[in-house]
Image (cartoon, rainbow, N blue to C red):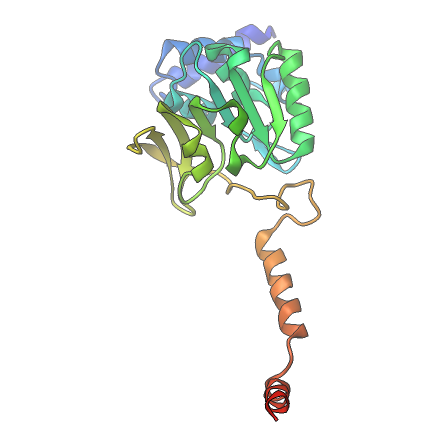
Length: 246
């Protein structure tokens, strides 16, 4: 079937009152324009409202992308930063609205950065800049940004991202650990909540899927166990202290 027809059907379903996640004409038009099948390996299922796994990360379902961008509310010409480029689909939808030259994306995984660049170029959004960065530090050399989208959960907005936000800008991210809410924060620090959501936590350097050690808890537990094993026992500490004082 013609992909354009499939996209129209997908967006019609997202606009239907049973989901109602597409509310504005700009988001509707962008979702109808971006060829999602260029970002999802399973072409036949690309326009189903479901998520996919790819290289240890999630390709978000179209309904989730729609919620994020409706909350972000980008406008033509806005400077946009997407933290968590993934396969590039969300950045492409933002680029359809703001313009490819105004959209920047970062990801902590080199393999995902490579995939996102390829996908965006193939889909016609090669003007989007995708760089390999620790997302918590943003992309300072291109700041300030009118819109920042963080596609990972954290307890609070990373300081670097709020510092890179324009005074009248907006940052959208999942806030919380187990119980998460989609939150928009403006340049003055005021919050608007858009209901519950569920995202993986923001990764730090060393936790990405293509690193040697991804799980922070496992790594920290191993390092703590090694430190304890190398520590002298109590009587040895007492003896050394006494010996130095004699």
